[in-house]
Length: 247
Image (cartoon, helix red, strand yellow):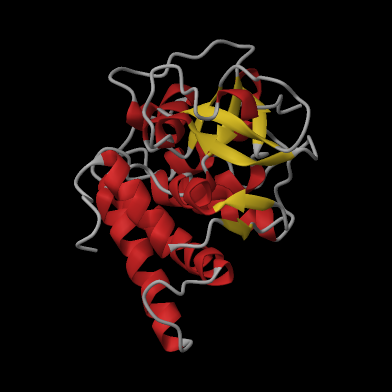
């Protein structure tokens, strides 16, 4: 660790490349850069990254490995095991503002497709085809919270469960869905009727692995939160040519 100036961006990246394998196979058996896979699975919270690193190193040691001998399978397994904990931690942070978030995550989010149009969000609020709806959950807490479609929408957006799909690039080859989330913005995520929304990897990983949520485009590797780019360039040139349409 002494060899790397880890408090600089490039030093941290060099350290990461030394420690981890360059690539992994994700849950859909698609090759993916390890750094990309790891970074897109948390909400830019340092403690989440520490949690993941601890899990990865602990599993490596228990399996007989050592520092610098981390296998791709262990990276994927550790992230899978920590997803639920990270999601719970995020929801808990919003508990005073959105006490309904925990129930919405457990009962409503599973009904929502991985990618959907903003104009369809009302279906998940009070659609008759669903047993569990946003309205039903809010109504059960009506003495604590406002019962309205707007309240349901803001809960999904502000907690980072859902973000907006951004402009896509060349659709050829395996690529990512590029998405922006309000937790990484200085203001609010203002939406229009024709916007496409997407569920954050932390909240959709388990359902993708079990087949409950699917990518409409077979060329999609996964969802890539826009702010996760470690190069932090304004135009995100690092990933710019790797995005594809979600439909």
